[in-house]
Image (cartoon, rainbow, N blue to C red):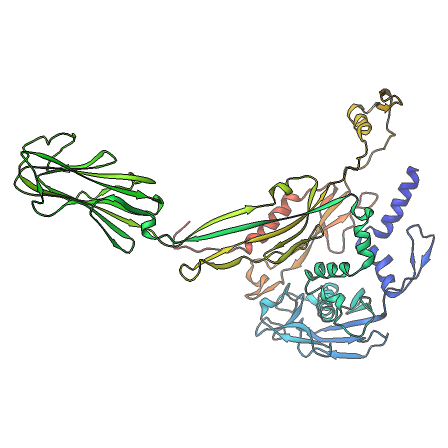
Length: 618
């Protein structure tokens, strides 16, 4: 059995080990309608997966000039894939450089006065060159004498592949019905074998090819097709389709936003005491006492109290609160919630009479500008002004408060799906996020809504709010049946109690008890396998002829040559199959060039990153 398995594996590897083998054994004959053999070559058959096929869909012939440019490029096409060439044309410009999707044409033999062209097709699906800026081209390199000698002839195969590949890319993009089965290089020409395999239609605008431009549409189209198919719906609703009794549960995750614009009096207000409240927009002045001259009568020293209660609803919106001013004839002290915060004309800390003579025969004034915000927490606070008056006098205190009564939002995400999502028997079936279908039939569609911007609060308090989502409407599919699950306890016992040399087992007896047993156990010898597939690393010199908007790369370097690096799978006798002009860098073995690959990728990444220039040495 092992020998048979190895023979089957070797036969499969012989036909599918690399891209060349796949193309030779399956792709090319499949598109061309030729014979294909099974893996063991016991049977052959001729598939017919192409509506039309031709041996020469496109043929490109180049002729390098003495300047190194491609002086002549001839393009022959079989436009209707009937097997006969029906269109021949020559490029109107010499080719000084080749790009993945176009060509560069300069003064012959130089890289001066260059023009850049991209491969395109016209309304009649004929190839043409469209003038573009160089950044719209990709993978450009120079091949005339300004970059080296004999570059076109010395690299003819790769030049033809790059030149023809750009043409094929333009043709198949314009008409995706056509595909390329094979590319054959013969000297200075390359020929592409083509076929029409997407759909047997003369119209290139097919529904099947529309998904190439809009891949996301396939999910909704598939859902529409399934809902209108009675067989699909019957299978979906059957016991086989569901696998168990199901219950669909609906819930939502909603972002609730309330826009608040309180009145200034809703933040702080005078509820009792005092004699006046002056409001100017978002500012308050709370006044208390009896400020008129000699409006208070006393004896030798009379204590008179004034009390004012301020109610604080939202302390976070109090921007500033100050004991702005107080004065008295003769003495005064100011307290908040019983705590002394100011007195005069000198220190008076007790609740009794002042610590000096009572009569001053004048009014003292104090402007402490004391911050009262630490005292003004949520709730009621009493401002207490005590005045000591001799024969006659007055007293006054002023509290100034600035508040923020601007529009603010109160935001809350109400998750009504938490309990359902935490149930292991429930799986997400469908989801709409702000009207965008992100899940359908248990499969993610790949669609995501853009951040939404909404204006809330009405005309009196318009507030613009941008969030990733506002409403997620979900449906979960939950299993609610009592179908018994298979008993896997025996398998678990075997796995947990067996070793490499002993097999433990536990079986259920007719009386409901379990019987355990052990016996010797050995695995068959699996033989040894190599630690890896031996590979070798080689390199071959190359001219640095890559081109960029600033010119040819080699012209900017001290040494305008570099190396191409190759990796080859070693032969059965552990020899490195180096190609022409290649030198072996690392002999056959288990090579690990991961650190080098990381450095190369980082180099490419950082080369494309932004650089910041500063005025000082960093």
